[in-house]
Image (cartoon, rainbow, N blue to C red):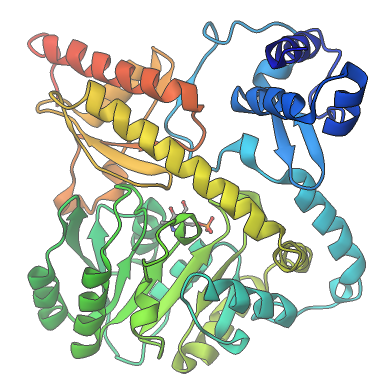
Length: 456
Ligand SMILES: Cc1ncc(COP(=O)(O)O)c(C=O)c1O
């Protein structure tokens, strides 16, 4: 039997509801015996079904029918109902290890039942911090469990750090422009005075950064060093080293947000922490982009001088992060499942980034500028004047394409209202090109209408 025939049969079974969402497909061995064909043929057929997002695989478990969309048990004209969502900030839902993680949660309930009857360590479970320290070594972050704080999402670490007094007794915060909208909101909420420095395709102007550090009472420089949100750009190792030197010279602390560090395939890329592990660089990591945002788990590696004040701030905020989720993450890391998952995610997101860049070059080269990203979720498109991001987003919504105007990622004085953020995380690979084509089409349509429409 040909592998295409097997694919066809499964598609029909799924469409008719005979193989419902979440159900497990026969093992490769049993199906090859039943159909009298080689295991390679079955593997090829399952690979094809996975590529087309009918099914997903769970390492060491098997293949399952995906939830939602195609697999609702009836034939779907996917083009009729299609929404190309370049706005979603969560991970690719078809690639998430739900079942593996469910297994870890079940084990964690058993292992940590006693701990759940009382309050736990503010800093996080020690046994989890041991696993985190081990995992961080792979990211060139060498530290000890005693310096790691488990936080309720990395956003909590960022928010708490902004409000803490620092040993340098300075007050202002320097942020990249544009930057992570959560950081912008925390600055607004806490009423903290900030200065901005532009980042993007050309990197960062180190002379300007030095001037800012020298004259502006800078307590913290907040930087997203890899696959920046929203531009997708990464600093070079040379720039990272130089930024650390400047921070040392002018007594500035660096908060290095490495929210997508796990996705970096470049083994030579070092985080800023590696250039100064003494405490000058506070390393912050999220588990939301490579795992599940609903876990609400992240970590911060803190200098000894901030240990006590951060412990008090964290305790005042939420006492500690949920023990059950901490335990499940510990088991997930310890079992090696996390490493296997990350390997798949690296491949998935570098493939998506390559497809996106190709689509940009095909459709946008003459029309708009765009940022380049080798992996991660994000990149930005700068629209031609006089178009505004909000109007283009509105126009595209009617065509069922969602994009995110980046206004809120800028400080008011630097506001750039012609930039849109594109996230590929939840867009199917086969729709990336079409989505970018539609953005180009909408841009051209609005440019053609610019005498009729006022772009205020
Ligand atoms: C750059 C950056 N840092 C931190 C976060 C917050 O992540 P978490 O879900 O771990 O709080 C995000 C979320 O989008 C982000 O984009």
